[in-house]
Image (cartoon, rainbow, N blue to C red; front, side, top):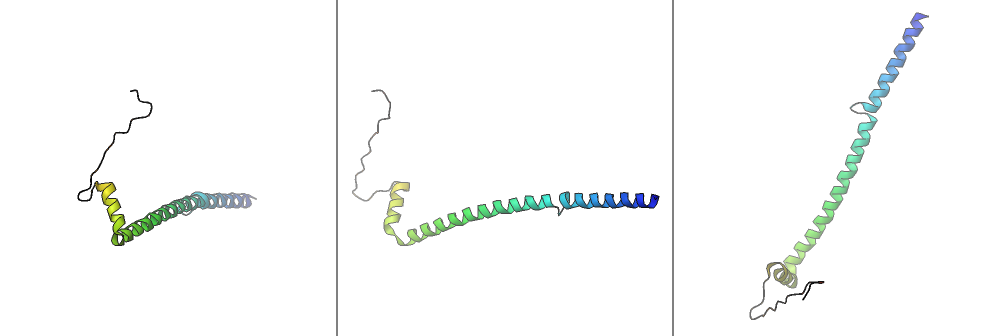
Length: 99
C-alpha cells in the first residue's frame, strides 16, 4: 500500500513539474506567445520601413529624371530664385489679432 502511495505522489510530482516546464520553461508556452507577439511587431516595423523605402526610391527616380521637380525642391527648401526674378513677401496678419 505504501509503495502505491509513494508511486502516486511521485507521478503527481512529475506531472506538476512537466506542466510547470511546459508553461514557464525556457521553451514554454508563455515564452512562445511572447515571441509571437514580438515577431508581429517586427513584421509591422518592417512593412513600415518597406513603404518608406519605396517612397524614397520614387523620390530618387524623380530627382534623377524630372527637372521641374528639382526646381520645385530648390525653390521650396533652399529658397532659390531664377535670375531676374523678383520675390514679393507679404506679412500675413494673425487671426484674432488687434489692430
